[in-house]
Image (cartoon, rainbow, N blue to C red; front, side):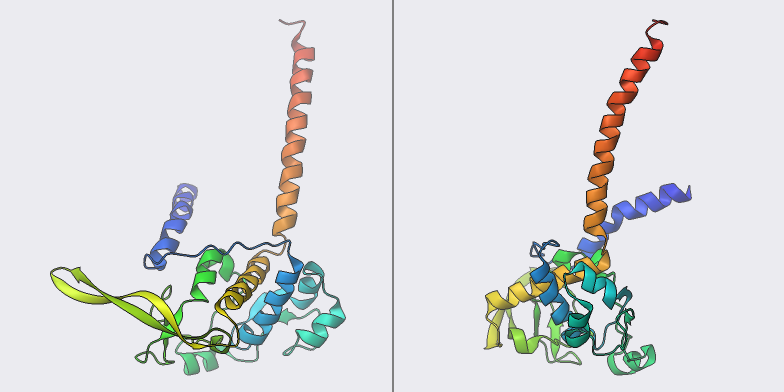
Length: 245
């Protein structure tokens, strides 16, 4: 009974994920885990903009170096700011209590966020912050309404404001966000920023399952083996049973 219930809940997860977006269209991330240049730039963005508040404690620097095509020396020199040894996990100095005091809740660990939220959700989320003076940090998000996180990448993207439209609901008029408009450019163009966020999401997807490509490659080999074994087993069956039939 437990297994049946668990299978049912797992089947519903995609629906829950869609509901969590509030019906907002998710843009396609189009990530490529074989693109090591993308993974390396995504790692750079992650350690510079995410790792100060969010940990990735299930990922080790040494494993990351090997998987994305960097040497230990390159990682130590360019991507390690809070650790001393290449074999350490990607942790942060901020405690959970400090995070709760400063942000209202401890910033979550991001090791598995791509598996929980999905690449398209992350890609859309990182690109849809907008000005909202009613929020504690002055920003809101289309995908994650009432988000408790500041827009740490605003210098790269710039500042966006919501484009509102009026809709009728229950006989009353309500204003809803219909889109976003860039009102203050950042250091990147919109196209450059979109590419940077795709690289960042690419790295986060890798980080959520470092052995993903190996697992898929092994899966293909297993299927091919089973197909070959099926033919051999069928021929053996015919040979063993030919006298009986």
